[in-house]
Image (cartoon, rainbow, N blue to C red; front, side, top):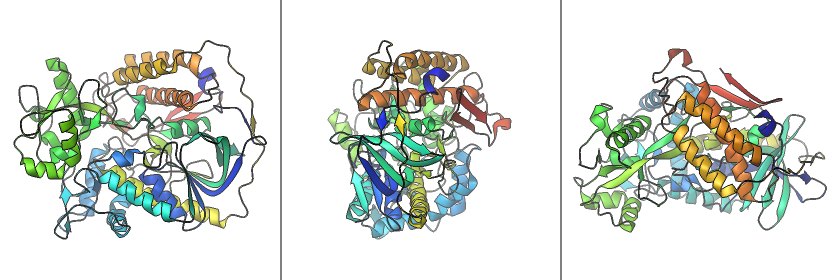
Length: 545
């Protein structure tokens, strides 16, 4: 494996003397909640360039339905939200990080309101929903079930209005540039302008997750782990790559894209039932449908296996239909598209990959071990989520730590002398003579094997088998020079899949979202211990610490 993955530093050939060079004080990669919030904050101190590989509106943030978890009611408390987060995180959370997002939550919500975000209210009071794992209603939501879209549109509007922020859309970031151990820029490919190099005093990686490594996923097509793979190639350590949260309820219609059915639906009283209408969660957890997501996902998977079925169902027939349609307009429209009448029909659901907990190692200021490089949002392992993310904490994390990253990067860029100075970097990559494999076939096969073997339930033998399979594909894919986005995304997903599999094999216990059927219990010796992966010569370095 070392020959295939760890001697390859760059995915492309480039010579800085022969392609356009652009300069930025702060470079932000990604246009989700964390990237946008970081750009807005950094722009208070220095000029910012925000780069996103698709359109700025295309992010997981815009797809988020449920809302933002924040203590907004007098009957709730910071301590309760903190304890809920720590409990669900199963011994792997960083308490200081958890306390920070919880205590800053109300300020970040108020900030969005001041910027024009419109959240649902009952008269003048914010409407607060209840979701699994929470001990009190604290989910702030917008347009019923389109909270992420409202937040994204608000942040995009603020970013576009700033004269300090320049936005590059349709610009694929390929690799991080490092000089004398410091991140100093990136190589990119723009669909209109071709290859470019951006030099920057500070780089903020907010590129999102890697949900497209799975066949069943709620993530958009652009969630291909590019930021994590490029960081790994540059030698930045990554943490807890085995921790993947699967959302229990996505709409299951054979042949259709998996679409999220928000956890808030169960928070409003929907039942999980089998084909005969029998509720089954009582056999798995005392909190029934509001149990943590990992428990509900495994329960659904277990019932599907027992009954040899392809899905379970959400029953909302006992709820007030008019109120349900008002609370969940997007979900109701989705059901109508598939001729599902919520007053009579049950909604077919099954789990799908949803949120990637692992990411770049960062400190409390979002700084990675590599000078000049920060990370926030789903691309970072901030310590907030531990071994399982509490529902609706992700948007909150993006807002809080996006602001932190923007402040740290902006101040550092404003305080440094002169523009980022490019060094002559010339990458020569020998073109492979080995037979090429079909990209689409490799991607489909990779997603299928990851779903089967590195999915909701795992076992050592299957994980070892997956490592061998990825190694085989790597022989024919990782030595190739591609000139298009699909090729780079395939190489990135293979890299991410390898890191996930190696990390899952190393963690010989079950904890939170990581469930090993051959090690089905939580081992106290692993409390607070993380799996760290890092590229080094001659191969992958994996440590548990």
